Length: 170
Image (cartoon, rainbow, N blue to C red; front, side, top):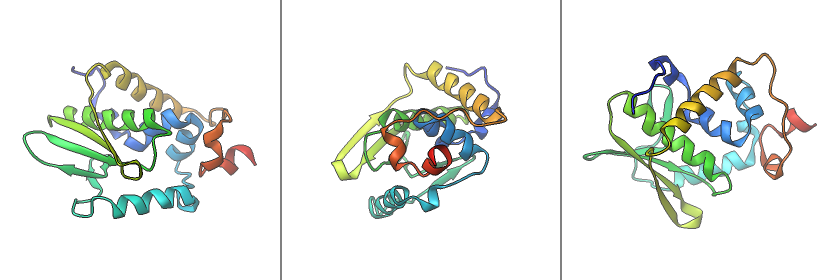
């Protein structure tokens, strides 16, 4: 499906799409350059898992504004994302779909695979049927990034493990 959005919208990162579904407040802070991830033990654990899993793969492939955990080349490019757990599965799926969308805008036919090594699970993600949702997500990310102040946080169970917890709740 051809997008009505200009290619400049491809400056959005996969992390921003992910954060949109995790927490718009977190997205706003991240987009403004306020990065708390280096202090988070959960982020550190995820990075360790990423480095240790799929050791033979070329890691962190940068294509424009997106950084993919690893890719496999064939008749179709396979985008692979390694995730710690499934508690934020929707965010993971939308990030993977954004990568498929992004590569499609560059003329690259791709599919995505999510890996949950701790759970011994792998899941294929497609863009089919989600094109409009991706376009809406892009618009929402752009809107949140343009706000002069962060959206009001909504407290949930996931806040306890969030690297931005202190900015929102302390």
